[in-house]
Amino acid sequence: MRMSATRFAVPFAAATLILAGCADSDGDTDDAATGGGTVTIENCGRTVSVESTPQRVVSLNQASTEILLSLGLGDRMVGTATWTDPVRENLAEANSSIPRLADNKPSLETVLEANPDFVTASFGSSIGDGGADGRDQYEKLGVPTYLSPTDNGCNGEVSSASNADGARTTPYTMDSVYQEVRELAAIFGVEERGEEFIGELEGRVRAASDPVDATGVTLAYWFADTRTPYMAGCCGSSGAITAAVGATNVFADTTDEWPQVPWETVADRDPTALVLADLSRRSIDGDALDSKIAFLEKNPVTAQMQAVRERRYIIVNGADLNPTIRTVDGIEKVAAALQDWNLATPRS
Image (cartoon, rainbow, N blue to C red; front, side, top):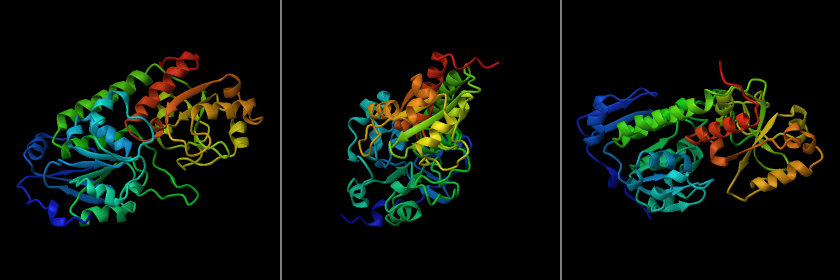
């Protein structure tokens, strides 16, 4: 299906809004967005102008989808893609009527068949042919794109040649999620909903982290693969979770977001507890939780680790270890487990 760029051309309205960084929206934002004026933002190194409130959005990643649904924008969505886990339970009903274009990355043609007027993504690799070239493909057709500021390439990070997830030398924080919520809310003219949602997320982080001081506790985050496991480095979602509870990530000395680490190295660092991702996909050994635990308890190297001997397993969804609103779920689960095991004391 071939689409003309003129299909999406809309005359510029008088009002133009420019959003930079994560500055708060003001009264002019409400007038411009709800009145159909142009909203312009600086987004991951490019200027994005949305000339009227989107009515047919395609979200290319679960993380972006869950933000849009949380803002009550399900009626504007004509497609989603790239799912790692079931949708968050409170969003299941709103998500049920939205077409899933693909479980994984869809082709450009598949997305265009949904006739979108706006495309969002959490990772640059999900857009068209990926990265800047992928965004150019859509924009040549007159379809604005938005890339989450949580993407580890958004702020000019340099990818590691040894790891497709790349290095993240600037630590991820929830501020970039709040920025994403605020910017998408402005684009869709629902700024008040955006601020309410940010307040809810901030409140949940405080409620989970304020009572917990896990100084001296060490954690390792295992995503997948039993042969050479993907363990979280310093600076992604796991870093935000670890900082929130005051613990230490045993692999905080690597900036790769998900380095592959020999089991002997994991055992040498002997974490107090293991955070295990229970993935809904089944592509490699160690995706499912039961396969992770079975491996840990049978392998002679891992079976001697203190976390395995004492079965200190903190179970999270794969999405909880992505930089998105699910980071808050991860903070809550880790904080609760450490309190249950009496490994954390109240902050002074």
